[in-house]
View (cartoon, helix red, strand yellow):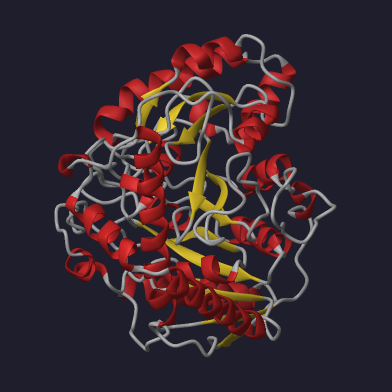
Length: 475
């Protein structure tokens, strides 16, 4: 395969070439490795290179839907036997883990060739991707700008054509924010659709969901077919889905009732480029025959933030204290960034009773959103309130989280809602800013109904195609 052809294919397209014998898994692995070596100095997307392990698996690829397709794990919950998972932190041990996560095992069963791990902010804390351990990931559309976070390394790698698909996870928007910033498809599935075993039942009180970032809707659907379903001993799981998501996207969606918003829940307007994206999407949805109405759930503007931030801080305190227990010592001052220290200190002040109160508030918010979704099949919002911010706008050396996040307080107004409620949520690259940066549109669905979102996504991929839009750093 020539160097120029590889990135023209999505994951299923590459797997089809392997199945036909037109290219080998080894050739695909070398094509991806060449791109890592070419683009990573500018993007800082891949932070752990697993070339020899990948080359070995490519010599005898597992037969699956993605047989021989180059793939990257995220350096958070991307446990792979023989490698370390650092969570972007100098405090996390560099000792390799001795087993795969359940999700990694399912990725391997799909046939992918794992070639490395991708950049994350420390403890996946930020809606950008920057850490003292790895440094910032840079957006291939414009390297002065953020990739989004926390799956920003994955976003940069997929958007630039290094790999067609990469592991990502999402506790407050960490799949969908990079999807918006990098011009990709990013689905946060229904809570517990994908497993977190064998080491966890749930993470961050059920906020964390696992999946991938892709360039095509069909890759997103096909990988969900490979990974979804409960693991032995899971504390709970998503409503069963007995069909195939890849088959669902071949069906034309029924006429849907779709709500949309032109302001955030506090009444604040979006950046003009974002507002234009909503207007264009609404126009297209109506042309496709859907019933589209301006409406939003009756949820206070600060409700999600007031639950999410202390819940996240509590989780962070648990995560750091767990690592301290494993290592037999607490973190040293220079092993966490000041911003992480600030969140950690807040987390340690939250009592068990307060945490349980947060859980009740989380569940009440989920009921409110579920009630709203009884009237509408889909709720359309922007993924972000403005185009991708510049790297450095969140100061990781600022110990006060409120000061650090002040410049972007309204940047991520919607994604945390569905982490709290558990609903599926899908970002699509349907618009671009005046200066050529991606602007994602966020489609929020009913609990357990990824199939509805994916059918609609496939329809929009045809009606508002993004395949031919390429970033400055590509292929």
